Length: 101
Image (cartoon, rainbow, N blue to C red; front, side, top):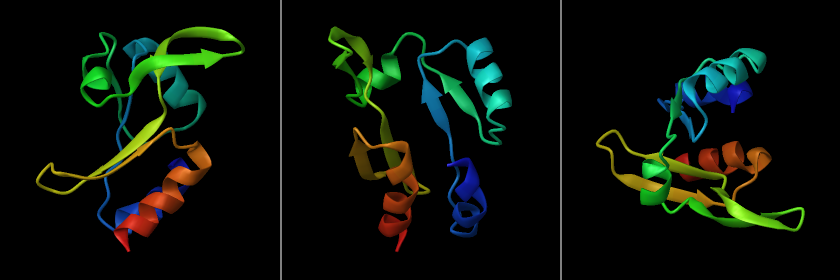
């Protein structure tokens, strides 16, 4: 996502990340990966649950609750235009750009 920000800005797209991590953890992650967009903390999973991305998943044979990596496109009025659940990071930008036309 970071590498596509110039392209997205030309299409008037604003990027925001959200995760259940604490703000301090997010700050370290953003600095490590040089992320120039905001990361929001959803440590109580309220937003994740509302969007249906806090779910049971199995990783290495262990089942637990966690985030289903997803991406959402909203218009300038806050209406949800597209939702991609279970999307891989490498597919996020191409699908976003395709949706934007």
